[in-house]
Image (tube, rainbow, N blue to C red; front, side, top):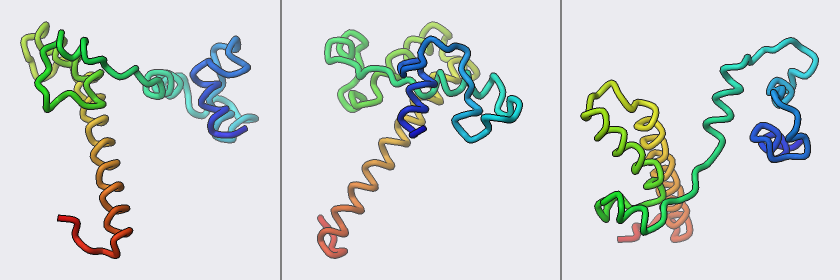
Length: 129
């Protein structure tokens, strides 16, 4: 089983989509052993491997996002800001939304750093600016 097939099985989009609950243990080579990873890991995979569609310009305008925040993580910022408003900006509320948004920002940062390293290597280590 390839990684792509494993993720499709987890998300329920593969050929075995009707088999639910799925056996995540088989993804990692634990096919013949009892449930090693458990249900909480299965729930984690379901919630974190699904990607939300990117926010459209209309959605960002309706949410009144400032221009500097209209990036690929805006689809996570809109519900975070809504949650913050509804919870009166209490710091212990909206933790899952905040974590998801900050993780997205970090992943985007890593992509930019990798792209900059790639450009630097293509120029023989010379600075770009």
